[in-house]
Image (tube, rainbow, N blue to C red; front, side):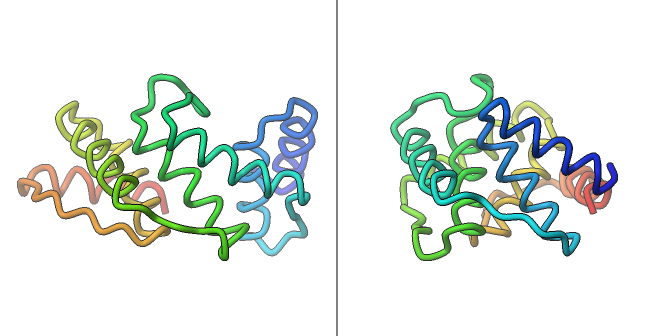
Length: 145
């Protein structure tokens, strides 16, 4: 996806009020050295969404485990409002449960996605994987870079 496509996606997300897509797109644009920032209201709303996710409200796709959703909002809060970033014991527990759920499903793509998010927010996953699982996870991680 080119820079202009990302800027177009950001415009569309703002038009639709899709906060998660707004924040992720701005984050990606910044990664590529492009100008982009959240508004004060968007930053405030990020923290609200994290609290809603912690309260069990659906803030992303309803099929995602709560720990995965919390991890994604934590990543965004840490990036855009580092002073507001606070990881709780309950967050860590739910995140680890999500990872274990994906492991049981054999969903290595989601495991890799969650692992990258955990690395970004400072959560260490202590799940012991079999050799085959570790290879599959590493393969997915490699495709994401």
